[in-house]
Length: 113
Length: 113
Image (cartoon, rainbow over all chains, first blue to last red; front, side, top):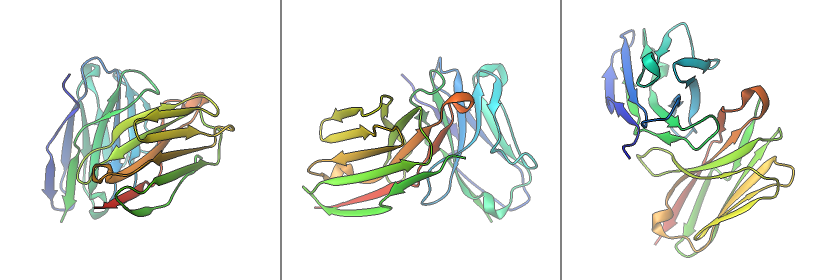
């Protein structure tokens, strides 16, 4: 079984530039999560999808962050414009159902200059 | 909201010594999950505890869920260098928030050969 695939692995941009991350979950996993992980911290949920519906986006900074999950499979997370404080690892995870074990991708390490 | 307290933040042990990390919540939990993240890697699911007082074992790892479902622990017997990494508990709330995981800060385990 292929795992969760994320791209790119690394991204370096200047502040105020836009950036996008892509995630392909495990086949058949209807629940998809985007997390942000700062150095020395645990992952913090940004948004959770059940199929194509965002069921929990309370932690997503909506002034600059957006996400979509068209057709309930792949998902993209966008930041526009990026700020220095957005430097972090952005992790995507998926699970077979709500509340089940989550499978994480390798993440995208974002650095803002 | 949920508060996830995980201690200790760091633990250095000699190979062969035991290790324990503790997780405490301010609220009664639906279930708790444990993840391991190797340096430079992504979180990997270890186990999920659901029942009050539940104890589960995986080889040298023993997981416990408190009777009140507000605390949990992970104990490793006779650590090995392969146990190095950060161990996170992740608490899952019940009710309308079911499906949302709140991660602890993690315990960074270093094993000296």
